[in-house]
Length: 590
Image 1 (cartoon, rainbow, N blue to C red):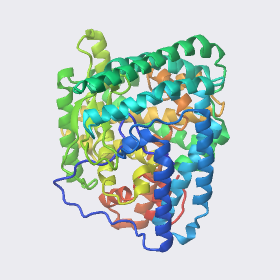
Image 2: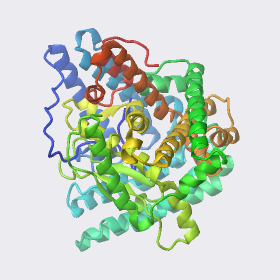
Image 3: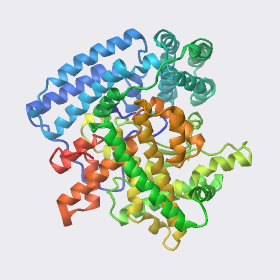
Image 4: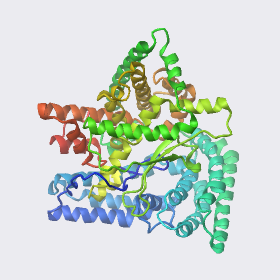
C-alpha cells in the first residue's frame, strides 16, 4: 500500500470547508481494547519510523518536525530501512485480525501492505541500485515540498531548505556508490531530466524565496544552493561519461515481482493473463464505441481525422483559465441537480497558472494540501499556459491538448467529482491510517471512473442540450483518454514480464491506444519505471463492478448518490476493502 504522495500532480487532502452543512462522518468504532491497541501501534509506526525515514513525505502531509531533514540515500540507510521494516512487519503481523473490528482490520491491512510494498521496492525492485533519477529528482522533490505551500514564513521554510540542501551533495555521492549496471533507459531519462533540475535550483528555488530580506540567511542559502547546483552538474557529467557506457541492466521487474506489487499496492491477486484479457475486452469495447461516435460525427472521415478536428477546437490562450473556471461551476451544478454525489463544500479550488517550476512536467494538476496541514490550506487547479515567446505553430500545437472536450474531461478528473471532491471527503475522516495510506486504484480509479460516469449520467446533454456534435465530441475525448489508459494497462504488464519490447510498446500506444507516436514514446518511457500504471483502468473497472454488485443487491432501493457517498467514507482503501465494507463479503473485485 502506497503513501498518498504526489509532487506536481495532485494528491493531497485538507481544504477549507464552508457553505454546505453535511453531517460529520462518524469516526470508526475503536471501542475494544484490541482496536485501541492497534491504533496506538499504527501511531508508533508513523511517528517513529514512517515520517523520520520519509521527511519529505512528512512535509507534504503537514507534519513539519522533519522539515530540515532529507531521506538517507546511502546503502547503509537502505539496509537500516530493511531491518526496521522487517521488525515492523513482525509486529503488525502478530496482531490477530479476528480480534479487530472490520474497519480496523482494514487499517491493519493498509499498514501491513505498506510495509511489504516498501520491502519489495528496496529488496527486489531496487530503484536505489538501478535508477539514477531516483536521486536527482528525489532531492528536487524534497526542495519542492518546502516551496509549494506557505505553511510557515519564508524565513522559516528557507532555513529548513538550507538544512536539506546541505545534505543533497552527499545524496548524489551515495548514488555513485549505489548505482550498479542500471538499465540504459533509466540513465537516459535521468540525463534528460537533469538540465531542467539544474535550472530548477538555479532559478525557481531562489525565486520562491525572493521575499526573504535577512542578509545572513540569504548568504547561507546562496552557499547551500550553489553547492547543490554544482553537485547536480557533476552528477550529470558522471552519468554521461561514466555510468551511461556501462548501463546494461534490465528495467523489467519480472512476473513474480509484478504480482507481488499488485497484491501489496492494490490488493489485486488475479493472474496476469486474466488481467490482460479483462483489459483487452474493455479496450475493444472502447474502440468500437469510438468508431461509432466518430462515424456519426463525420462518415466521410477516419477516426484519426475526426480526432484532429477535435484538437483544433480550443479557446484562445488568454481565455483558458476563464474557461476552466466556468467549467467548474457547470460541473457542480450538474452534480447537484442530478444528485451524483454530496459536495462537502461550496469553496472552489483556485484556478491559476501553473507555477514556473512545474510547467515542464504537467499541463494541468490539482494541488491540495496534506491531510494534516493546518496553515496553507488553499487548493489550486493549476493550468499550464503557452509561453508568450513561442511561435504561432508551437502555441497551436500546445493548445491542441486543451480542446473544449478535453477541458471538460480534465476538470472532471481533477476536480468535480474527481480528485478535489474525494479529498474534500477525506478531510472528514477521523482515521489516521486512511488519511495517509491508500491505493492508486482507488484514487486514480475514482477520477477515471468519474470521466465516464458523468457522461453516462447525461453531462453532455446538460452542457449542450441542442448541439449533438458537441455531445459526441465530449464522448470522443473521453474515449480517447480511456484508450490511453487501456494501452497503459497491457503495456505495463507485457513490458515488465518480457512479452513486449519498448518499440512494440510505442506501436501499441499508437495502433491500439489511438495516441500520437510522440505520446507513445513518452508513455513507454514512463512505463519502464511505473510498471503498474494500469491502476487507472483497473480501478475504474473495479468501481464499476462494485457499483453493479451493490445495485444488484439493493435492487430498486439503489441510489447513485448514496453509493458514491458510501464509497467516499472508506477513504483511499483498495477496492477489496471497500467491497467488504459495502457488500459484507469478500467477493472478487473483477
